Image (cartoon, rainbow, N blue to C red):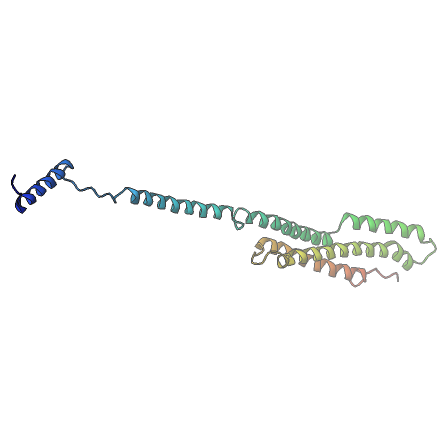
Amino acid sequence: MGTRTADETGAETGTEAQSDDAKSGGETVDITKDERPAQDTAETEAEVLGDADEYEGDDLTDGSDPESAPETDGSSGVGQGAAAVVSAVLGFVSLSGSWLGTVAGARETLVGQLETASSASVATQIKEVYGDAWQTTALWGGIFALAALLVGVAALARPAFGAPGRPQPVWIKSVSWAGVALGVLGLLIAVLKYTDVLLGLPSAT
């Protein structure tokens, strides 16, 4: 039996190491390497896309959705527009005359004819038959004019009591101001006619 020398031992060890490398295909396997970085990147992208979808969904379902605001504005605008048109119509009626004013004037004429004696003076007959009827017609004209004025002012003042920052449409302002102007003019004419300053009764002498 012989004793192995250090060179023989080293050579044998080197041969065994080469043999192990050959069995493993000559490749070094890194056991710490895995496929998780790609999976983590995909999950991160999915989370970002999910957050973006939630953000867009919040924008669509938020209380400031542009589809809900026009509905409120539209309902409010319809009421203001209707009030403006009513004001203008009432102002026109106060100037042109109304069915109520005509009927009330005719009724007052009939009452004056029934209550005035035939022996009354001409001045008294004119006043009772015609003067009271004309004053009644002027009174009804003044009522319509006052209503036009009040409705027009209410239509103009309505935005001050609504949501701030929402301007009133120009056409509503124009029609409302027209109603106010007609109401003021009709009220002035009614007062002048009722007091006999305008188109007073003719003199009996």
